Image 1 (cartoon, rainbow over the protein chains, first blue to last red):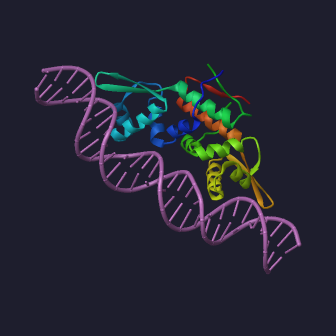
Image 2 (image 1 turned 135 degrees about the vertical axis):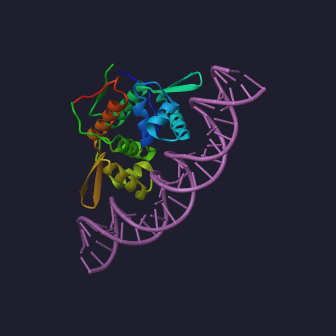
Length: 100
Length: 100
DNA sequence: ATATTATATCGATACTCTTCGATATGTCAA
DNA sequence: TTGACATATCGAAGAGTATCGATATAATAT
């Protein structure tokens, strides 16, 4: 299955941080507000907003405002695309398939 | 197929650099000496050695010495494992399969 | 309008990483 | 063992990044 092209350097940089991976893990399957993420990570709110911005710029999270709150969730499809593109570039003899 | 566990932060950090991705790309399917890599990248030799060390520490390249030269090649299997682990953690609803 | 709550941005600090010249180490040939 | 070549390590400079307190912006309710 053909995917859109992915900037694998930007993708890798976006996920190459422990705090961001924590955030990614907890909003992987849920829509969470910034404050929810702050509480679950023990990371300061500006720091969380900063990391969410990086993930958003890389297209790895979606966000929607509801009232005063902004909810974020991981964009799993983009995550899978990034992984597949990295595998395609750097493991062409160990094909990885995106099961849809 | 079950893989060994991967430190996804270390994996992502290892591939999160443009110069390293260039190196990874050119020694993906070939065994290349450090000097070969220097010539194909226009990057200084100490810099190349530095990046190779990071990739080696992360288990993403193999190396073998033959005489004075040391040859490196990408470990595609580890690359695929890293990609699959990231996808498993952060795209569980878009399963990616390691085809063996 | 004002107060309250939620998130984003700013600014400063500390830390990490990339880069490369200089140098050390390793390997081999003569 | 000396010289030549290949790679690794060292050390320093500069760039980039994470973190968080303070503050600005946004949304809502009273």
